[in-house]
Amino acid sequence: MSTISGVATAVPANRVPQREARRFGQALFGAAFSDIERLLAVFDNALIEARHFAAPTEWFGAEHSFAEKNQLYVEAAVELGKRAALGCLEGAGIEPDRVDHLIFVSTTGLATPSIDARLVNEMKLRKDVRRTPVWGLGCAGGAAGLSRAFEYTRAYPRQRALVVSVELCGLTFQRNDLSKSNLIAVSLFGDGAAAALVSGEETGSSGLALLGTRSTLWYDSLDVMGWEINDRGLKVLFSRDIPAIVRKAVLPNLLEFLHDHGLERDALRHFVAHPGGAKVIEAYSEVLGLRNGEMDHARAVLRRYGNMSSPTVLFVLEEFLRTGSIGPSEYGLITALGPGFSSEMLLFRG
Image (cartoon, rainbow, N blue to C red; front, side, top):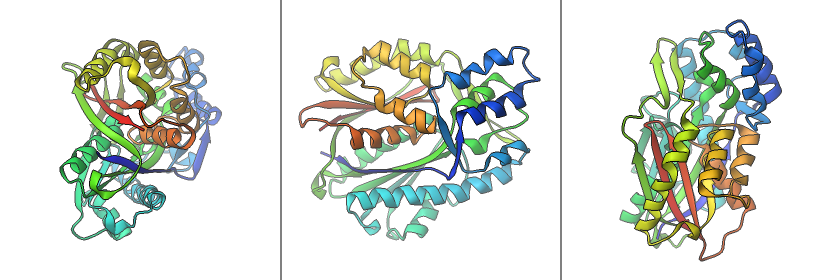
């Protein structure tokens, strides 16, 4: 079976404490809402201490064109993606020329040639490396990238697939958007990159064993989350119903997935979940009956980095591998939710 044989992460140098972000939010949105003090509670209740951004704080004080934002996205995505990818390969003891398939995941910028083509040049991957750029999956993208890597290495068990996920959510910021959705985004999102190496069964690699995946798209939910593309770039869209959807839809979907593998809910001992926000973590904990610290890794990542969209679940995976422990016969779940409204799940075993 395929294994996750390495994970690494990278963040930009500009670290912004949450209290500084709150002051920025108050200054920007104060005149737009008569109840601004009440709304600013989203900063206090987000469980976030700090976040990292590709641009310095003063950059957010001015308006920027889509072209300017996107150029900075390309530069930062290559730098962060390369750093995460090389860290992942070094940790796995694998040279770059042994990567057979590069899967690049992002939603917060555009590039043609795609960022993965630039990474091939920067990292000197093989000229015949397969490439799959994946765009538009938002917060579900990191888990989806792992799923596609698992499927590839099942088909080609002697090969390795490197997943690189980069999001620069801060660069999508639109200063003239004084909506509640943008206020929430200012309180929640950060920038980051992560990489994971998935190795086929015949490579002889060790790590977390991947057993199966499940992708789900719920009908009539296109407006739950995503981006609206306008002249200034990507405008964030949020529904306040996301925690309610988690409570309603996640458990039945999970039980069907487990049933396909002959397992019951009690078989799952470990959860590597994308922490969409404090209320999403609460919803996961409530609906799945998590009471023994199973979401502590997700909370730790949210606290230190905020929600970085697609790479966040890989940050949680790195935290789990670094601080957690899993027995050889114990099962776990990697899961993330994203635009669509969609879900990605992977079942793993120690």
